Image (cartoon, rainbow, N blue to C red):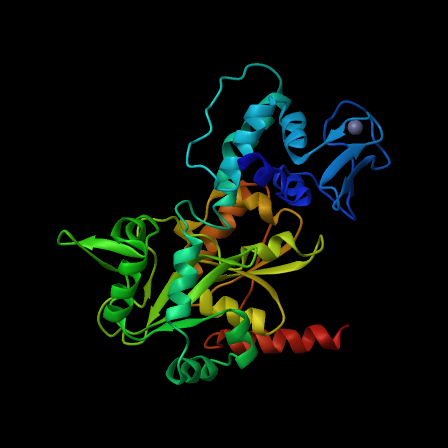
Length: 351
Ligand SMILES: [Zn+2]
């Protein structure tokens, strides 16, 4: 049943989504109805409930949403379904007059899905993406290519990288399993001259995007890109951030690198950094800035003209959102891998 499914969403995740700063399962009361110098709000993960010892409020994850956003139970259910991609129906905007608190709450209600889009796009179809990766394990050719870029076998395995060798055969298998409509809906197929085809047409490395251990997006990188684009994204879906889930797992004030594209991000992860990758500055949404609020951010883009432009655009976006970020200065001609290693050495030396 849907309601059980909703009640199963980890309350800690819901709390974070609501912007509650939870540390060791405790926080100051988010309801704003009383003073709270000692954190009175606590979360119980085993029962998936919360309680505030200051005001005696408490309950399920749905109750938490209802209380914090000051909305009814049914609306809270709808909010959660929408935030967790359980339903395609959009949240209804409601005219809110009055205090700033209410304005802020309206912001959360309407913007939360927008924030979730950093983790997975609407239309994402986990079953199909998993099947595609199952049909397309990485070959020696792909492994050689990635290892040349400095990726370890462990990193390749953990990132669950695949390789599309035979697009036609793969396409035929997918159609039999899922039908054209579903393949179009999840962006793995597109229409060309009124005929549906797989978005990748030649040999490509497949980079899966993972969220809660599920594949929620895939980007392909073509081996032979002398003609046409190097990277091919899913058709019609918004682009999430690569490895964005790390932002939910690390400690406050941790250092996080923002890189452009999946390979550079993987290189940073392989060197032990907390890193997220964006698929072009144009895909970065203003609302995502809130995800970075608690961390030390360093933008590490290529130092070519496009990279410099992108980094400056992103810095401006962040500063408009009230967040100061740094831009890494790579020396002229220094490549990313070199930079990451030199920084890591220095970092270890000063420990
Ligand atoms: Zn309270």
